Image (cartoon, helix red, strand yellow):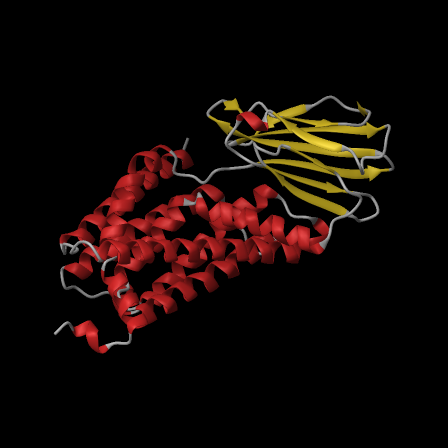
Length: 348
C-alpha cells in the first residue's frame, strides 16, 4: 500500500509535490543556466526624480542603467513649456548614468504629460517621482508599452501602494539569485511544515534588514553584499549534496535558523534595489511596506508555481533519485560563477 494513502488528500498532494520538487528544480535550473550566467543581476529600471525647490523651479535627476560603458538612450520630455536653468551634468555610478539639471516651468507642471523618450525601445521600466513644494507628491511606473503619463497635483495612498507592490514583484521576479536560494532551500526541506517555517524565517529576516537599510539605520556596501548572496547559494547547494550523502549539519537539522541568517543578508540586496528606485518622501513607510509586500507575493508565487509544476510532472513520470543531486550541482555551479564574477568586480 502506498504510504501516502493514509494521509488526507490535500496533505498527500503537498507531500508528493515536495518529494518531486527535485525534478522541477533541475529542469528549471538547466533551462535558466544560459541566460542566468549571462545576466546574474535583476533588471534595473530607470529613475526620474523631479523636485520643486522654489515656485516653478525644479531639480531634476535622471538615472539610466548602463551595460559596460554604454547607457540606455533615455531622456525626459514634458508637454508644457520648460526652460533649462542649468546644463545637464552627467556622471556614471558603476552600473548607471546619473544626469542632473535644474529647470523652470513656464506652465504649471501639474497637468503636463511626462514622457521617458526611448523607453519604448527597451525592455526595462522607469519609475517617475515628482515632489511639489507644498508637500504633494506623485509616483508612477512607466513601461515600454506605456512610456508616458499625466502628472497630477497629488497622488492617492492607494496609487503609491500599488506602484511599489508592482516594483517589489518585478524585483523578485527578475532576482534570479534570490529565487535560486529559495529553490535550494526547498531541496533541503522536504516536509511542508518545516518549509513554511523556513520560508517564514527567511521573510522575517530580510524584512528586518530591508527596512533598516532603506531607512538608513544600517547599511552595507552593495558589491560585498551581492558577492555574499551568491556564496550563500553555493553553501545551500552544498548542504543539499551533504544531506543526500546521509550527513547532518545545522542547515539540515534546523533549516529555519540558516534561512533566517541568510535572509538578513538577502534583505540588504532587496534594499539596494529599493534605494535605486527611490522613495516618496511623504510616504516612505507606505512605500517600504508595499515593496516588501510585492517581494513576498512574488516569492510565494514562485513557490506555488514550482510545487504545482512538480505535482503535474509526478502524475506522468517517476522522479529519479539522482535528480536532487543534479539540481544541487546546477544551482551550485551557477552561484559559484556569480561568486567569482562579483568578487572580481569588488577589486576592479
